[in-house]
Image (cartoon, rainbow, N blue to C red; front, side, top):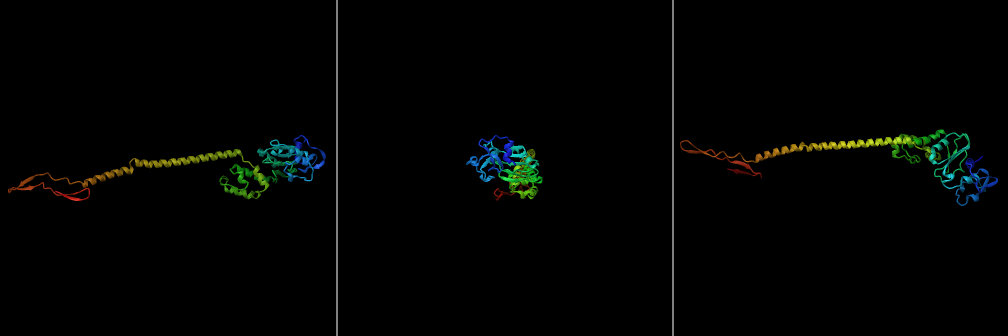
Length: 325
């Protein structure tokens, strides 16, 4: 049975490695699968290889030609920059921007031997250490350096629910540790988050939960529609607030205008003027003496003065009393 390196080497029709030769059948020091072409391990690895602890057959002296070719090259021309999905003679070689294709491959039922070697950072080789899977089983895949046991179809609901929550406003930074922010609670609702945690919280910390979060993607069309709704709601809220502010200013201006147009101030002025007139009249002198003159009465020739002045009382402005004759 061939391993992942041999499958990629064969399907990709790679050129032979110039330093490999035919040798008696041996297990590969790197992948552990048997081969009849290879090169000495110490000649292949040199001092730059740091994956000695990953060697599947540490007692072997050879590295197979397939591993030597698959693990060669420098970025961007190297297989470690890509994720690889192989079933039979079909080979899907894609980067992490093609997650829909990844999900489709992993989720569907397989009819031929298959493997999946997945990378996020593209800094480490994953093909030689990926496990081969038989048809009809969920299988085990390699994600970076983690072996992930894929679930049955019911288990894939985790990816679907995470994707829905991302679409509705949650983030992967919240979903992965379960630390939901106030915005997530506002957009999703407390009940929805609690139901999710009750159903899937026990999976958190496992390799499958981590891969599910990594694979999940929001629906961009729905996100755009949601953001347009949020934008319209925000604009309406601001417009309502401005309208209320304008109404308050107009009511305040109306009250001020009433005062300016007369109101209590004008009435007060009239009352004050009237009171001032009354006070002036009350403080003023009497209407004055009667016209002067005298008249002779009777035979005796007595005189009666009709214009005798009556004393009048005058109150000065200082409040003192005086008699005037």
